[in-house]
Structure formats: C-alpha cells, structure tokens
Length: 395
Image (cartoon, rainbow, N blue to C red; front, side, top):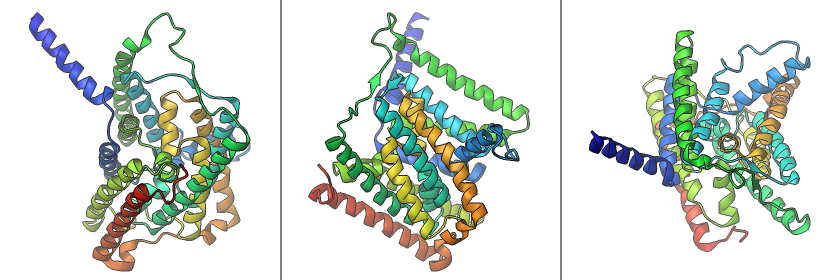
C-alpha cells in the first residue's frame, strides 16, 4: 500500500510539473485556444470579451441612476460576462497551481496608464464592435472581413503606443518596474499550499456549473467552465495579444503572433466546416463594421492596450495572476465601453462605420478560404522577414 501511494504521488507530481511548472509554447496555447473557441461556438455562439465588459458597465451606470432601464440580463446570466468571470478565475487557479500568484504592485504613474489604457480599449472596442477577441480573433475566424481590418488597426495602434512608451522612457523618466508585495515578508511559505488552493478553485467551478444546471441555466454553466479553461490555457502559455502586436515592433520577436496565427488557422477551418455544413448559420458572427469602424477601433484599441500592458483577454488573465494595474485596466474598459456603445447607437454614427462582410459571399467558400490562408501566410512571411532584417524593430 505504501509503495502504491508513493507511486501515485510521484505520478501526480509529474503531471503537475508538466502542466503547471513547465512553460507552454505559444503555439500550444494557440491550438488549445482555437479548440475551446470552437466549443463555445457550438455551445452558444462566437467567443467574445467586450460584451461582458459592456454588461458590467450597463449595470454600474444603472445602479448610479444614470441609465433609466436595467440591462436585460444580470452579470451572472450574460454569456460574455460569465465567460469573462470564468477566464479570470481560471487564470487565478492556474497561477496558484504554478505557484505564480502574487499581488503585483506598480508605481502610481502606471496605475494611471492602466486606467487610461483600459478606457481607450473600451472606446476602441465599441467602435469596432469587439475587442482583440471579438473584433479581431473571432471576427477573422468567422471569415468576417472586418477582422482583417481590425488586425491592421491593432498593428498600427501598437506601433503608435510603442513609440509613445519609448518617448515616455526618454522624457518622463518614470520607473516602469512593478513591485510584488507578496511572499518576501511572510513567515510562511504559502507557495507550498497554493496548488491545493488551485485544485479547490477548480472543484468550486465544477460545483457552480452544477448549480447553474440545477437552475436550468446549463448553457451559462458551460460558458463559465469554458472561460475557466481559456484562462488556464492563456496563463500557462502567457498568451497575450498585446505581446503579439508589440514584440514585432519592439524586438522583432514574432513568437506570440505566430501562435495567434496558428490558432486562427485552426479556428477558421473549424468554423468553415460548421458553417458550410449549416451546423451554424453562415452569417453567425459577421457584423463587424468594415471598413472604417474596424480599422479606427483597432488603432484606438491597439494604442490603449500598449498603455495598459494587456489586451482585453490578457488584462483578465493577468488580473487573475494578481497584477493591480490590470485590475484598473478592466475598470477603465467597462467605464468607457458601455457609454461609448450607447452613444454610437443613439447618434446614428454606428451605421456610418460600416457593416459585416462575409468573405465567402464575395469569393465563394473555396475562394474565401484560399484568400484567408494566403493572408495568414503573408503575415507569417512578413514576421519572419522582420525577425531576420529587424526592419521595423525599435531595438
């Protein structure tokens, strides 16, 4: 019995080391992310993040008395809100399991940048009808041409944001290094029990899923669980779209962006199979404002995510890891996204920004998929060329 117990303990330690202590390559996280996004598409509809922030903002302003009517769904019954909560908790559990959770403080100046950057992301997401997930990743995966325009806008915004940060380093002289406030003064090594707390969080998510099931809200429970897995996957691979759009300009490293493109190629293929076979309607997820809204929103969002230090999904998983600056980015996001969205709707400006364009409707399925993969291959080749020549890198 002792030998069996020892063997079991050793095997569990190997699994833990492989899953949570060994870094995941970006492409591995990208593959898992595409799989989970496809599951969400089959379970509900397209994966997004900004809609959850909009729901939080709607409730916030309604409680303040600034909105006359309450949102149709509560925070715990709005699909994107629930998946966002799952993503945050999943990253928290993963950080505990990998002994990486800590309260990461930052200089006061950085907190202001987090709040302003989050606010700009909220504005950009409202204009583009989606953030880096809904407006770019899911949109392009749905073969919505607006996703490609937002990608270009994100590149432009990230470049401008990086130029600003470089200017700030040279002229403002702020200390950009955050300070971790955990563990160094503690008399007890909490890292030893952190994995067990992480397991408890995982069990709690399963319990909450069952509660949703008992209440007749199985779909919401599934979105919570899928969001939880996305948070875990993104945290383990440090999968961040801000990194993907920043590093090619900063150091030339395109590892993260290549992971994003690999993920997109898998995601789009699965989406095409489901739409082509009418498992999901062909027009699902095709509503992003081509061309002006996606491009302009992408530029504003890209600049904001460089200030904040994380995109919409990246801010969620990094907040779950304990970064206080990113918590302020989340606050800034929902404070601006909700009113900006209402302003665009009520003023009639949204109609001027453009509408969804389904690529296969223009070029047939064969032509549309061919164009999509040629676009991905072209971006890949450009990234590799930039790595070798450092033509567009700052350092």
